[in-house]
Image (cartoon, rainbow, N blue to C red):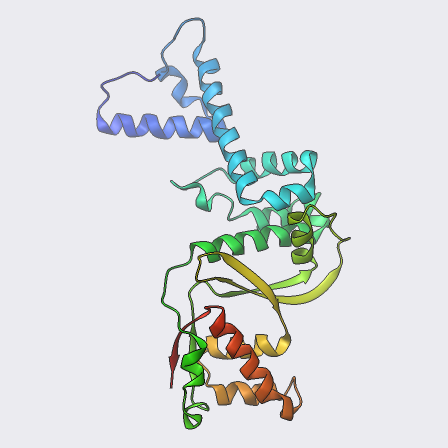
Length: 265
């Protein structure tokens, strides 16, 4: 398509000009495109540009399949066109291409008027982040069960790199779950919920709802607090006689599900 035998510096400039045409229709590359058959340079460039945009659309459809179901075809196409126009791909890998999609949905109409849409997009990106997180060994609940009673107060936990909290202000996760099951999603409504997301020992991404006491416990360990510190803070949320049982139940669950990488005494 381009003239051959170019010096390296010239080739780099040609590549840059070609990319600028694909993303912004900048015409600097046109004079370097050779004629072929009955197609003029603009027609040939537009074939590449259309194929490039189709590939970007495919990326959005793959990364945000459930979001597409929520929006429907017309709104999804409107989102794709607007997003590609505002956020052309700047990375060698398409993995990061949709990183700005939640922000785009929060800032542009008609999506801005329905905040649950951006939240669904954020949730889907969090699932991807968990799937792509670094590997680490995990320990089982036997480590906890064998911990001497005297070591419990000073115990600290290190979570697997894949573990994270998704804080929802709308019923975005419930809508996502419904659409995954081919069920009509509920009407959008405001609600505050927390979801713990992790990659299990079979390398499958999982998530489940987390009560506020579990959230406090999680945040304490993430901030390198001890178990005794966490129990003290839990007094603001639970009757004192329920703190021990609640905490142990959360810990046993986390260990059993492969969320814990190490235990420090």
